[in-house]
Image: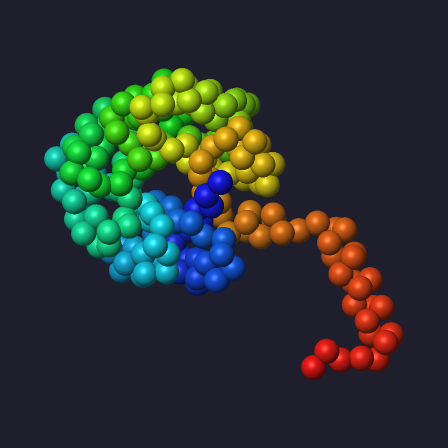
Length: 218
């Protein structure tokens, strides 16, 4: 499974990339706003850290505006994936940009039917939001299971399932068990994956025993 980092904070991305935990990055207008920087500047810097796909989202809502913004964003770096919403205009934009060889991430997916439409429009990635479904007492992971099953029924569909709105490690593990190709995670959730009380306890015991020897490796 590929790990994308869901943030626009360059320092976080760089630190996780140094640990080999970054296969790509997703951003959105809210994350860019939190960074307090110009969008093109942030995307360019992120693209220099990771060679993987970096999602940059359009803000226009009409086809002409989305196409103009998408074409501008893809010129920032060759690994930019233009992010469009799952609307009719978004799918028309996806089809046009995909035909031009642009990576396209179709976002805000909440149903298997929407995911199927995105794949037919040529999306590189579909981003179903599991956490937001859980928030309204709907099973977000069932959506992932349904999309993965549908896509596997039709091998000519090349769209990758990019699980988004991940709130905790269980979301990630369940998505991996279902066979989703990508997960995008906030840095805090990635760090949660590292934690286990028995790891900490074992390390403390090893270090305590080593101190008793009075030795030094160097």
